[in-house]
Amino acid sequence: MNASPVLVWFRLDLRLEDNPALSAAAERRSPVIPLFIWAPEEEAPWPPGAASRWWLHQSLKSLQRSLVSRGSRLILRSGATLDTLKALIAETGAQAVFWNRRYEPAVVARDAAVKKSLIEQGIEAQSFNAGLLFEPWTIRGKSTQRPFQVFSAFWKACLNQPEPAAPFAVPKPLTIPALWPDSLTLGNLHLEPRIDWASGLRTAWEPGECGSGIELERFLKKGLNEYPSERNRPDRTGTSRLSPHLHFGEIGPRKVWHALRGSSRIDKAEAVDSYLRELGWREFAYHLLFHFPQITNEPLRSKFSAFPWQVDGRLLNVWQRGVTGYPLVDAGMRELWATGWMHNRVRMVAASFLTKHLRINWEEGAYWFWDTLVDADLANNTLGWQWAAGCGADAAPYFRIFNPVRQSERFDPKGDYIRHWIPELRRLNLPWLHKPWEGPVSILEESKIQLGKTYPFPVVNHEKARQEALASFEQMRLARSAARA
DNA sequence: TTTTGAGTTGTTCGA
DNA sequence: GTCGAACAACTCAAA
Image 1 (cartoon, rainbow, N blue to C red):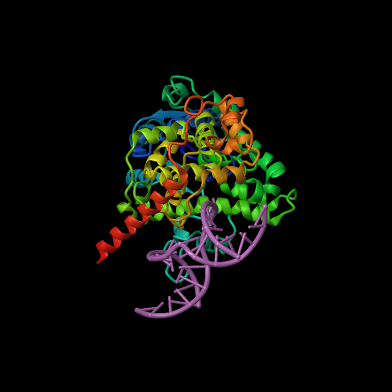
Image 2 (image 1 turned 90 degrees about the vertical axis):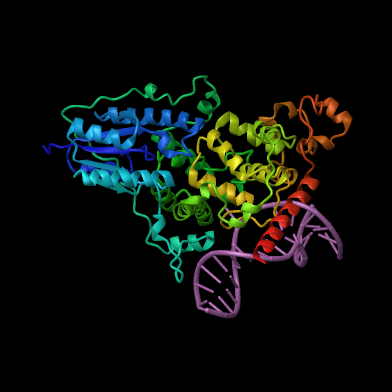
């Protein structure tokens, strides 16, 4: 037996299938020591939020279970990563550390320092790609050789690349070390909330590799064919719901890619392309985050630094709690609070509402989503918010301001989504459900609604807010041309 | 270097 | 109800 063990350092790749770091370690026929290190402060200013920590706990539990069922274990530690790795190397005599790459700026810097230090110490340190179809540095403009800032050109370049490799199989039984190092218990990491607010999350999700496989199967069977149209319907299950699973790496994009391309159950190539395109947006988000790492806290378009954002804690709070008086926005914010997830169509409406109607800085929204989403992902969250605010890559033109009532009428036509998340409006008929403040007094009375008491009046008037948002853009434009002159 | 065509997800207005 | 145009100006990416 090959004596010295390999440490497999798990991060956002909490799976056994298609896990190149784990497979590479298994092929060594050396003992394998699976390891997770909890070091949130190393990810500042974006350490995992509360919903993410809840998910992480469940996902680690699931990974631990699968490893144990294979006769292995998952060693848990907390504290500074490099010190922890060095301590484990000393304890176990490991000569190699393998992991799968991450792309968040703070993590990239941390990992580079870890790798350098390990190599200096004579330890083999290898990183792999488990999380992306296309590594950010491999995609460049044809003539410019620069990173892309426009999605369609980016995705076209990706599709011209060789097809992503087939996923790795689950490795054969792992070689067990002669002696297991000490491990914390999962409870020691204190990932779960002290006050149990997670019952809605438990109902909505099954974290872990097994749960992701079930979700993918469901989507292939029931969702994908109608994806191009149904994906916009928050009142139906028309999306894949894979986002948290992809974020934690319980399933990898290669598996999803090949499952879709190879599935015989799908009769519409259009549906496959349409969903893969969304995976493409995920790739694009990572591409941007890698090449423009400052965008997590600065607008990609620097002229937006001059945008006259409003600072208003009351309005921010109203938005966060889902009491803006616009039913679709409120339904979305309450879905988020209850389940840790919000339908993408509603995310756009809610984000547009915060940044345009309330003119609150997109960063406030990004931090709220970061804390409350189970799929909080720095690349996707940053791209999404900057896109909505108009300051990001390929962003919506400034005059594209979502009308929360019109969006509601188009995408929740029967009001089922609103009724589900705003029970106090459930007796209200169409079309007033989309805009209660326009409902006749008699109808509101019959529906047991007292505006201002049981459900709020709109916090802003749509048309007025729209005009003010347009005026703010104009102000920014003028400030810039003045600065240029 | 310069030129040219194009750019996720919308709304409103008027015919 | 449906349809097309206007809503600006700017930046990116390729030729």
